[in-house]
Image (cartoon, rainbow, N blue to C red; front, side, top):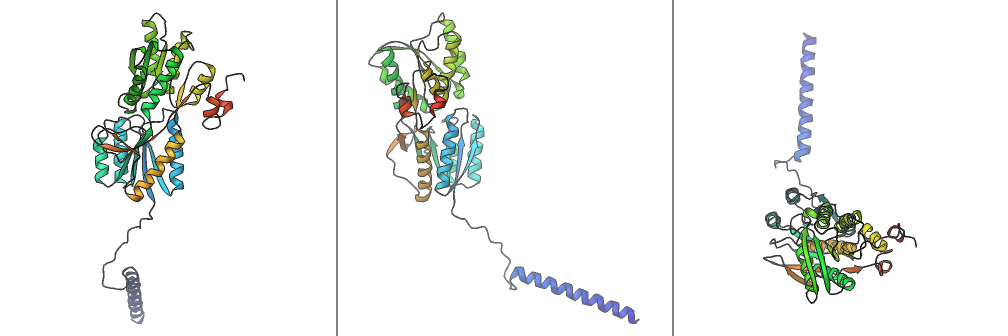
Amino acid sequence: MLLHCLSLRKKKIQKVMSLFLCAVIICTFASCGNTETQIQPEEDDGTIEIGFTFDSFIIERWERDRDVFVARAHELGAEVNVQNANGDVEAQISQIEYFIDKKVDAIVVVAVDCTALANVIAKAHRAGIKVISYDRLVSDANTDLYISFDNQKVGDLMAGSIISQIGKEGNIVMINGPLTDTNVPAVIEGFEKRLRPGRITVEDTYYCNGWRPEYAFDYMNRYLADHDGAAPDAIMCGNDSIAGQTIKALSEHKLAGTCIVTGQDADLDACQRIVEGTQYMTVYKPVEKLAQRAAELTVEMVAQGRIVPEDTISDGIYMIPYEKLEPIEVTAKNMDEVIIGTFHQRSEVYLNVDH
């Protein structure tokens, strides 16, 4: 009996101790009061969050834009989430929606299709997010800023180079990027405006869907087949990748260097072709300046709510704040002055040339 009582007493003590420990734990979490327990949300540390969605990295320069933008944003205390749409407009829309869900402060867009993003950008605006058109102006979307180079000037420089070499008469072909990129019509406008006083004939115009340069190779081969292997006097190419494939087709017909070929972006292989003599010129657009300035304006816009634009441009419906940078014509004559040591190294540009 005594042992049984001691056993019961021991169990009661254990139960009491258990209840006491539970009470201590409850008091600790509830601060021993009668109010409900609340879990405090994490405090916003004030870091500016930027989402950046790129069309793709097929074009050489975009990786440089990305790296410079991210580095400058970090210097300014902002974080950047970079996404690559790989040329798929639906993927880019999903990326913008992802940024909206993440509640970023700003979204920077290199558009896959400048005509297809208005609805998702309106959604971003409803969420209080600033949207920047980077290099390509998104149509009918009322983005908060468009920052790019003067694209009409790009076309003007290309036409001026051609005129300087063939005079005011001749036949030329234009091989452009897609019309879904709003820069393309702007470049064409500047190009054709410069040609108008002369008697240069634009014999044909072709558009490479998705900026895919292999289409230029196929087109040039068809053109040469249709013209008994004769090249035009000049070929205006929408960028250096297109110029590279155009020259590849010319080379296979032993015509490389026999006609004037232009491009833009100052890609390394284009600069090599220029000093080798197969491409006459490119348009250098200092992407470091563009990317740095875009990062600065994005952070400023988030911090201050708005910026005062130097200029405005129509996106088809709205007038958009517009900051434009000046492009530079590059030929073999000014390659060392403009490009060497600034954009590319001499040993790279002159790799295939005895000097």
